[in-house]
Structures are given as C-alpha cells and as structure tokens.
Length: 279
Image (spheres, helix red, strand yellow):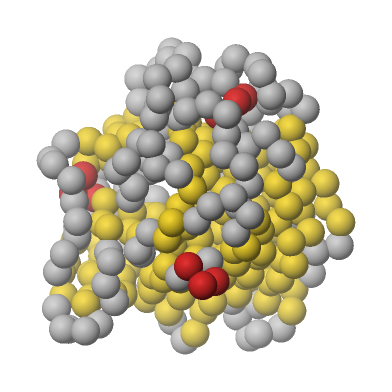
C-alpha cells in the first residue's frame, strides 16, 4: 500500500506541532481507515491489503516564537449526534503574503465535524474537506496554490488525506461529510476539477460542526485571505437523517486581524477588520 511519505523526519502540522512523517499518510487510491483507541487499520479496498498502525507521538513547537499556528476563528454548532454536514464556498483571491520567507505561511479554510466537545476539548478526531493555500502535512510544496483535499486527523497524531485537487480563484466548492452505517465519507468536491474522498470506519460519533479559518506560521495578517469568506447553504442532519437547525457560536482564538463572523440564514461570513497587522 502506497503511503507517499516524504523523507524520514518531522513535519510541522497546522496545529503548530511537529509530527513524525510516519504518522502522515497521503492516500491517492481507494482506501478505508478503521480507527480504534488502540490504533488504526488502513484497508486498500481494491486489493484487500491491510496495514495496522499504532498510535503516534508528537511534540509541541518551542514556545516564544514570533508567529502562531492555530485556528484563527471558527463558528461551532453542537448537537447530541450529527450524521451529515454540507457547505458551499468559493475559492478566494490568494493571500498577499506567504510569510517573511516565501513558503513559510499557509492558510486553511474548511467545514468540519469533530467528536467529543469539539476543538480544545475532548475531541478524538476531525473530519474535514480542506481548502488550503501553501503546505500542510499532506501537501509538501510550500509554494502550493489553492488545493482542495479530504482530511481525517486523529487526536493521537495520525493524519490521512485523499488525493489533492488543484483549484483556483472563483472555483465553486462543496465540502461534505456523510455517515452511512458505521462509516464516514469525507468529500472535497470541486465539480469538474474532481473530488477528493476519504472513508473512515469504526462508528466515529461526532457532535460538533464547524466553519473554520486556520493558519500555520502566521506572522502577518496579509498571510490570511483579504476578502470576506462566505460559507453558504450550510446543512446539518442527525444520525437518523433528520434536519438539524445550526446553533452557531463564534470563537475567536487570535484577535490580531480582528476577525468577525456574521450569520444570515444558512450562510456564515468571515470578515477581517485589519489586513496589515504584524502578529
């Protein structure tokens, strides 16, 4: 089974921690991940090959650095159970800056579902169709443009991703996560440009839905999208297929760029009050 790992060593992930390259899996074929508290099993659904993976270890980035790698702002809706989430958005103009050295800063825009109490709580994993600009654990090129990818990231340190779809400003996207039986299908749908998918089995129970802006190695507000970001036609349903009414609550983690969230019907808009602040 091909994991497309880079050279051995540590990779800085969007949460600001270094992860062993052996914990990052770039899967460009049909696959399912069966996840348990004791580790994961990756199954090639074409060949039946199974690879058993133990939990991973990670270490935090050294404190005192002049940047942050973290969620910038999100709006979250919590429910007893969630069985599906879908969101539409448009690829924005590229950020004005990639950091003090080109390729240092990256940004991620996504809708997502988490277990437990959600981000910063007891979450064991997150399902997320991610629009990224720059590098990530699954995109090694630090000068990559906009890319749309299905991700599954575990609290234990493992990250899985489907194929990477190249997109550009103005493209229409939809991120979907759907539960069928005990399996989740994550879909990053870029229309005619393709769909990135990833399947997770093991009965993962999610209770928190997100619209999120995340940054890695953010030195300056110009490393974030300048224009308003509209996440439209958000839809949620429970594990029985019954529609859920989102109860959005905004959480701001970094105030430097003065992020704000506006709610209008089923649309969520993220805007910025500052664009030239140095973090």
